[in-house]
Amino acid sequence: MFSPMEIAAVVGLGILIFGAERLPKLARSMGHAKKEFMVGQAEADVAAEQAREDARKQAQADVRTTEVATGPTGGIGGATVVPDPISGAPGPTTIAPPHS
Image (cartoon, rainbow, N blue to C red):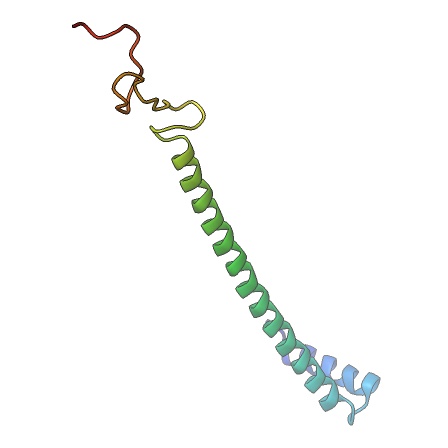
């Protein structure tokens, strides 16, 4: 990947630019920044998973509500149960009087 000469050149350039006493502090602060980034990323992953789970539960509740509202006992487009005016039994209304 990188030859030893290239690595030595980068380290030497770092010592010239930042100085030998500041390089350990710089490396330490970069390690802390990476750790904080990873913690923040993990928290965001947990929050995103929780939001997906909440949305999934809400969608399931909406489906159940829709099924109840449009089921066989009523709702938009569903059959409405009307009691029979003569007998009072649930079911379709009588169009003609019963035969006697």
